[in-house]
Structure formats: structure tokens, C-alpha cells
Length: 291
Image 1 (spheres, one colour):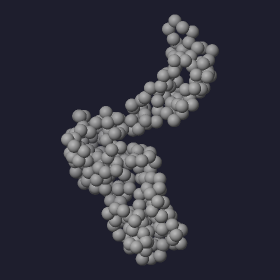
Image 2 (spheres, helix red, strand yellow):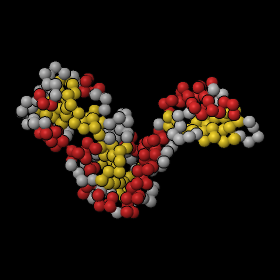
Image 3 (cartoon, helix red, strand yellow):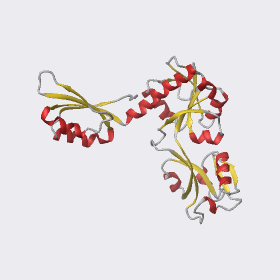
Image 4 (cartoon, helix red, strand yellow):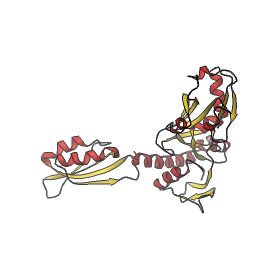
């Protein structure tokens, strides 16, 4: 039913891991194969292509559904529908930033300080040109095919580059002076396909599986037993998504309690629960949380 295109390159591994966690495992003959399959009746075709190309292919109707960054949607000005953000990337869960940077020792402190004729190197020439013109700067924007940060000062006076942490730019002796765009990975759709009720429903189901998998990565299930006298104090410790589930233990003066809690709190939560009278504490991983 749905023709799906996934990103190759820096996002590839994280994307394939997400789909596998969502029980939509991508199968292909080798790691360099551009054709793949997913054993799911909603997905009829899978391609793995460069994320730069994906928005235009989806907009043109070559694919119904695709995963790419908002940065490439904006760079290509593609007409696509979005089913929402998928907050994962190659390094962190933070957004990728498209930033304007200059040499550390440059007197330029903001985009408005750039003189006309400034040489700017970037993988985002159209996005960069629009941004500079909107700020009254007439620059010479050149398309970079990689190693953009190495082109200052001999080839370029400034660069527009992507970063998650800023570490690589600082290591290259560059200083960020402005952020053009914050970009998360998105599930995008061809507008005509999205307008089709059957296809849109299938797309939304896939999105639910993917987002449910991402939400679950930050949560664990905690199960424990507690006597009635300590029940209230134990419940107060649990930062559950909703009210914890409490069940009376058969034949005993106590209760079984379970709750979904943030994973990053678990190292302090379990000892605190034990200190407040909880016993038989179990921590379990969660594969998906779909509200």
C-alpha cells in the first residue's frame, strides 16, 4: 500500500534501530542495498536514499511516506504533509541546528555585521540565501559538498553548517553567531497520499508505533509489593505517567503496585522505594508506550 523511503547516511543506523524497535524491521540483502522490505501489509516498497533527496521525491509522489530532517524540507521548499517529529538523531535526542559560523577571531558578532559580498559555504545554499537576504545581507553563497568547516578563511568567510553539540565547529576554530533553523527528524507524506483516507490511516498507525517506541526508550516498568501501612508513602514516591496500578495480594496483608516511571530516575528511585517499605522490586524494560 505505502511506498516508504528511509534516510541513508548519518541517520541510517538510528532509523533502522527505531523501525526494528517498532516491530517494523527493515530487511535487505546487504548494508549497501538501496532496496529493502518490511514484513507489514501496510508497506509495499522500501527504498533507502539520501535524506537530501527525500522531500522532493515524496512531494513528487514517487513515495507516499518518508523520513528526513526538517532542514531538508526547508532547503528544498518541498510541498509535503508532516505526521510529526521523531525526536532521534545520530548523536542525541536534541534537534540538529543549522547555524551560521565564522572564524573565532572574526570581528563579526551577528548576521547583520556581515558585509555585502561575504563568501558563505554551505550544503544548504537555498536556505542560506533566503536567510541572508531576509537579514539584508547580499552574499556569495557557494554549495559545499563536505568538509564545510575547513573552508574558512581561504575559501569562505562564513559557513552555514549543521551541528548537534557545536563541538566539531569549536574544534575547527569556528564561532556560531546565529541559528537559522532547529531541525528534528520527521515522518513526511505526499499530500495526495495523505488525503486518501485508507493511506492516511495506515500512515498514522505507523507513526503511532514509531512514537510509542521512542517514548518507551525513556521509561521503565517498576513492580513491587508493599504492606498496607507503607502503601501511601510508597505511592508518593512513584512519578508515574498515570496513577499507579494497585492490586490486593491474595491471602496476604499487602498490595502489588506497578507504575511506568522515567528511566533516568531509576537509580535513586529503587533504593528510596526499599527504604520506604517496598519489597520484591522488579524493573522491566518497555518496548512501546502508545496512549
